[in-house]
Image 1 (cartoon, rainbow, N blue to C red):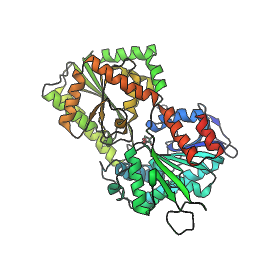
Image 2 (cartoon, rainbow, N blue to C red):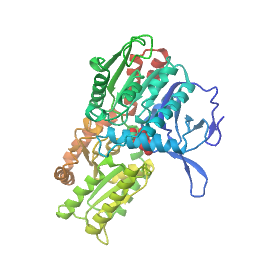
Image 3 (tube, rainbow, N blue to C red):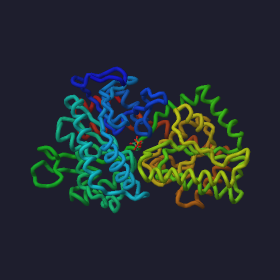
Image 4 (tube, rainbow, N blue to C red):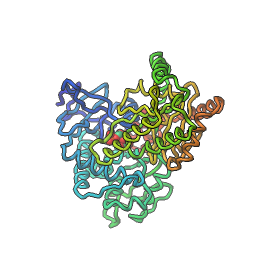
Length: 500
Ligand code: F6P
């Protein structure tokens, strides 16, 4: 039985028809300044996107609490049924910081940073994936639908199918899937693809990601993939990979662009306190003509450096002026023990110091830099206060911040500058699309945003909002789960697809 984390759950008896498996649970264990333990929402878009899905399905959630050597048992928090998978400090170092975030993350983001290929971290990745598969197999009811999330758990679908062939298994990759030319660097590329092929349906953010994966399947295993369907032969037919069952099996790979709970943002914007806070933020910043905003995890994929470079050049050339312009950069702490992230933080903070030193005045800073995460209310107030949102990722699975900005702008105002290398660019075509490597192009887009007439802002934002409000996270999960129920039409698969 569980203790400490809220109402306990009896893990020996509790079984669910719908199970989500992700590296992190929606809450992370933290220790307050006074030493008392507490829970806070975990970082990143994945958890934000899945929480409403989970509530609708009343399922079980398997994941890590974010703390090494945590012996927290299963518990209920805020109506969610949470089943922790414990990780030792060494496993966090090798599976999470090592293989997930120092190998797969840079490799899947087009090698913006050099991936490390290390046999020890790979072995721990296999071991931890096995543990997640076992934990999921333990809580899934007969014939349940299990939805595995993201690059940290790519081996789980196969491991789970081997233990529980009765389950309907979906997998969703929240980050890009690289072109074969890059993916083929990975010494364990066959094992990863075989791991994923344990699922019935594999979802990706962009059509191009699904295409890259299918190409990897063809190149590595020589199996046909007509119309995104991977036709696997029956086990024992001597081909590899086999279907992991006595029958031939079909795995579907397709794009399902993830989204946000748009209605929740709209509701927040209507709140008096949030509007008042937005006005207060503008005042506190000295009522500038233009507030630009960047909101990112402090990650080298986000193109924060490129954004700062373009902005600094515009200040230098006198095309922007600190007296009436400010760039607010929220950089939430992330993966702080991974070397590349430490180096990035140093670099970004050095740049902020330089830009402010060079262009700031006693009254105005050029960049208002905040290395914190904030509650959603504060983020919405910031987005409402910002005239321009800068999303300049060098590579990004989706980028939900772009969608959050759009959902927030119920006044049909504000300009979104959006990298074409973020998945969101496939849908948000009325944004000012940029190639962040092209600093001149980025500068032109920033100036176009600063000077864009009200009517054009309204037209663009109106179209963007139509897209985000109609294609929200509920739409995403409904699409995915009904596609999954179609690939494997069992009774519980149908039920989960309908609940949603
Ligand atoms: O999708 C990217 C992702 O790694 C998610 O899995 C996660 O929720 C988010 O980014 C935050 O990353 P981390 O869990 O490593 O802090």
